Length: 632
Image 1 (cartoon, rainbow, N blue to C red):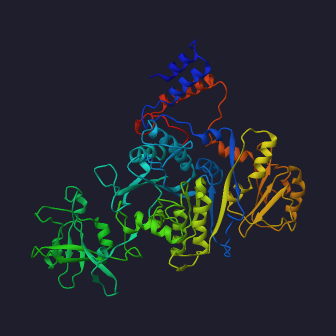
Image 2 (image 1 turned 90 degrees about the vertical axis):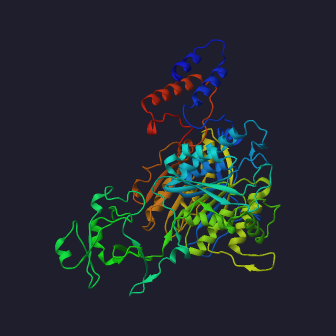
Image 3 (image 1 turned 60 degrees about the vertical axis):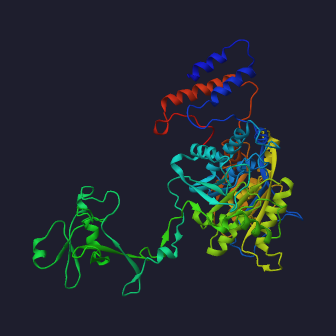
């Protein structure tokens, strides 16, 4: 199909209205030559974001309020109440490229009232059931990719209703070359007794890295592994002996000829020498020649090159082979602590652990004082804590934008307390039926402040943590001066989150009028938000009298991208300027849905022509020619 010719023909058709032409052009623009295809279904929140901008306002009332630790180094954790597409948009300004780990447990789209789309449950009879779910996930995962750091990783829980679709969608968004694994784990030991011929007991976790830089944490080796290290040297170090002869694939001399060489064993002191070729002089002195010969008598090869063997002779020992009297081989002393730490192994992709199942998850939830009526299917805290451990970021930022009952934050707080990490957690969820304030917030409030189990046992709180609660507020997207000023006035929460700085302080020894500016500082950084540009000369004079220190990040209201550099010229070495709201517009523009003009025909034709020409000049990765379904 030549989309350029077809688009131009539609543009010149008589008898069709502009709306009808636009609809046809949209179909052409969305056509994919390769990849996952679905019927795009508009979402109410997406339509709202065409007209309004989301910002974050902190809640501080009788029901929900900040929890602040006495420890000045306590990490700041966030709960964001609102639609997660709006929350991800907000985070695109505060955390683009900063999130190290994302864990999400999205709706599984079972058709049994677990997935709400535009205020209605999507049931199993809905002919657009999978399209709605893919539309829903596609928008969110594309922003999630923008949020991930270069070394970041995402874990996605799912069951078999959408596993195949999620894998294809994630391959397209994150790149199939960044696929790490699919974990299969036992969620319900007894299995789901539904209409299927099988009792389904497993669910899945898809793992994608942002790049090849991510490395998962290894696990301490189990006893059955460490028990193999059954020898002890004179220094008390445990080791095992492993044959230096290569076994398995490519174990023949012809596979690696340079790794076929002889060792020579001195029968008196059992020392070893190595040579590239046979040495008649050593044989004449009584040395025993040892080549890597396979059990069938054919020539094999060693696992090490000769230089490596020569450099590590102290870790080698030659012994007579148990089943072949008179024949010798060489063994490596494989120390359990050879990496200056405990022996570790890679995690497997199949998990069958009681602590990870649904019964344990509900028991843990009920110990906090909640019940089935509060949240019917919480995830296991032990499961999420294990994922947090595997993610391998002790001081990273973790995001869960399908937070539900808030298991992810509890697991993270617990992991921090166990290994001394300083991870930060961001949870996003709506407040349907009061879940965000009554369950997500309340659950983690109890974990931080302490609680009493139903049996009367007191549990001490993990008090070295701060918890703040924000709610999404919408402002008009139209760039009038009035709207721009209101956006800057309301964006202080975004700026505090962006800089992880929440402590308001006097500015140069003076108390600021919050209508004009607000100042924040801690031991490491300083931030000033200027709402009224007429105050700039006065503020610049104050900065000039302040003692040296970290540069002050100055966010100043401006009608454009000019941050009043001239007015701050005398203190330019003390400030880092940023014009608002332009910086917010720039970040949001990358993720917000485009606003719809009244007449799209010419614009759509131009876009289709440009995309078609781009396709012809670029066949894509490995020659596969396909269009992306949105921003990457």
